[in-house]
Every structure is written in structure tokens, then in C-alpha cells.
Length: 384
Ligand SMILES: Cc1cc2nc3c(=O)[nH]c(=O)nc-3n(C[C@H](O)[C@H](O)[C@H](O)COP(=O)(O)OP(=O)(O)OC[C@H]3O[C@@H](n4cnc5c(N)ncnc54)[C@H](O)[C@@H]3O)c2cc1C
Image 1 (cartoon, helix red, strand yellow):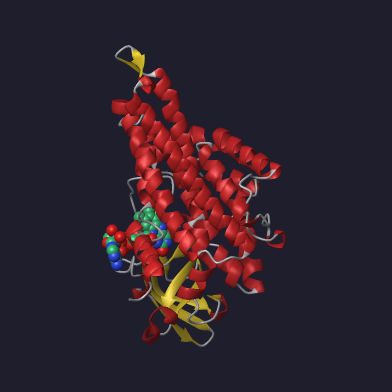
Image 2: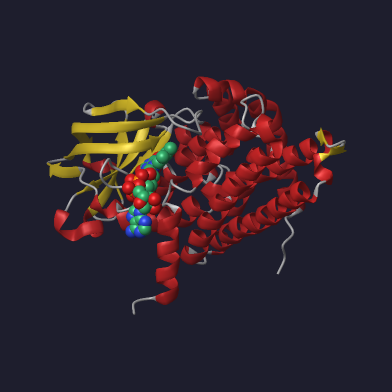
């Protein structure tokens, strides 16, 4: 068993971390305050090949594999790369494009992936609805075949990149008798008549990543935009993206923990109370030690699933364990970071308050912590 990254992977981590330190981190506070998407950074990420990492070179990607994609996302956040940008990146490259890569026809891949890889076209993924979140198979959006088209009606809630997207992978019911097996996936272009961003949502954290409610009113999509076969939306896309979403997409939470721990170490050595640096108090020093344990365990869990993915080994259980542990740990680390910074931790001048607001989303999006526990326990105990 080899836990060591290769020299190339270490160099890649360093390169991406330095990119984030220089090109993203200095602008994060301002963009977070204004709740604004960081287009300049996005374009640079596209030019650097980050937005198309996993995809084959013939479609404009970098052929990087799951582990190298996880390394890049981890490194980006370790360099202070903003969590909102990472969220938009994950929604675009992972849930917004991996299904096209895995399930798409040659024409669909040629049409959509190059623009996604360069960042010229922004993708998003629409499953959640106002009345269907954790119980995702209960969505009500419908797609009815009419000649060479499908007519989509319904709405999607909390869609990351919704306000700025050029295309959206939309999940819709094509056969309501079949439950999850009656749900199909469609690639819907933003300029399709009937596709509307009904409202942009104002969020607590990840404020640089735009989120929207989307509406589809008699939205006519060519039949060739069906992704996979009819009925392959829910389970097909789930199969294609599950490990990506629950492990690779949470890799930025790992780098974010590292960044926060470094901030705490620096602060604990500098800040003096009772005539001593606060890091000399065991209560503070032990918090930092515990944060480091969470970081190391979280990183190993992410890299384990990424490695399994690259070996073609199914990792459903490992991905759920990873999602649960990493996101809960990132939230704990951010919370302790605020505590270590004391009153200053609560003030916007210091970045730790933002990391606490950002980290909360990890325990909610892409299946809440409760849902991960439900799946893990069911996998362990089976039916009894
Ligand atoms: C900022 C943001 C970005 C998002 N981006 C996207 C996106 O790009 N695309 C997309 O499709 N969705 C997206 N989502 C939606 C996200 O995946 C859902 O919010 C999430 O799955 C939870 O669904 P819900 O909000 O409807 O909560 P609910 O399902 O209503 O859950 C509410 C509470 O009940 C608990 N609960 C529900 N069912 C059970 C159960 N069986 N057992 C125990 N507890 C249960 C939950 O854990 C939670 O604590 C995003 C959400 C947010 C906030």
C-alpha cells in the first residue's frame, strides 16, 4: 500500500496551490462581500485546464483521472481558493459535465465538453425541486415526448451556477409509474424558449457561487438532447456521478481545512493573553492538534475514493463515508478556528468567519449528513 503521491502529483499540487494563492485568494473577501461571481478567476482556471481536468483531450480536457482532479481541488482550497469558486467548479465540471462524458453520445460530447473545459460555457445540474430534496426520486418536473422533441414543465430549486449557466442537465419524469426508473436526464440550453431563471437566491455562505431557482414552461428540447436512454436519468446519472460528487467534489473542504489550520497556527503563535501566546495554552494547542487529525483522515478518505474510481472499483459505501466525515470535519474545523480567533474570529476582517459560513453547506448539499448516515447504515445492516 503506497500513500505517497508521485513527484508529478506533488508538483501539480504545488502549482495549483500557488495559482490559488496568487490569482484567487486576494480577491475572495471582496467578491464574497459583493456576492459576485469571480469571472476573471474562472477564465484563468479554464486557461489552466482546471475546468476540464477529468475529460479526454479530444474534448478539450486534460485526461487527469479522479485522483488528480481531487488533488487539484484540494490544492486550490489549500492555497486559499474560495469555497464558492470551488462549489461552482464542482457543479460545472463534476455534476454538470461528468454525466455528459460518461453517458453522452459522441455528438453531445463534441458539442458541449470543449466549451465546458475552457470555461466559455458554464454548466449546472438540476435535480432538486421546491418539494423534492432528500427524496429526490419524488421530483415532479415532467418531460413529454412530442415528435422529435420533449416538452419540459416544472421548476428546479437551489441550482448552483443557475444564474450564469449556458446549459443545465435537467432531471424530469418521463414515466410517472416507474418512480426513480421513470426519470430521464436532458441537456437543456439556456437560450431554449421556456427556460427561465425565476430568481437568484441570497445565501449565508459560498456567496461567490450564484444559486437560482429555475423554471421550465413548455420548454421544447430536441430529442437528441436526451442524456442516456429514457429512464436512465436518476439511476444512470447517479451511477455515473455518485463517487465524483461525494468524494472528489468535497476535496476542496480538505484544502480548506489545511488553510484554516495554518491561519490558526499563525494566530495562536502571535496573539498574546495573560502575557503568553495563546498557542501556549493547552486548550488552544489541543484544538489545533485535533483539527490536524480531522484534516489527515479527511484527505485519506477523499484520496481513497478517488483512487478506487481510477481503478474501476465501485465505492458507494466509501463515497458516503467520505462525504459525511469530510464535510462534518470541515465544519468542526471552521467552528474551532472562529473560537481560536475569539472576537476577531467573528469579525469580517478575518477570513475564518467566512469559512464557517461556507463550510455549513457541505453538510446539506449533495445529500445531507443524515441521508449519508441513512445510506451507510442501510448498506451495513441490509434489510432485517
Ligand atoms: C447552496 C446550495 C446549492 C445547491 N446546489 C444544488 C445543485 O446544483 N443541484 C441540485 O439539484 N441541488 C442542489 N442543492 C440542493 C441540495 O442537494 C438539497 O438542499 C439537499 O439535498 C437537501 O434537500 P432539501 O434542502 O430539500 O432538504 P430536505 O430534504 O427537506 O431535508 C430537511 C431536513 O430533513 C432531514 N431529512 C430528510 N429526509 C430524511 C430522512 N429520510 N431521514 C432523516 N432525516 C431526513 C434532512 O437531513 C434535513 O436535515 C443545493 C443546495 C444548496 C443549499
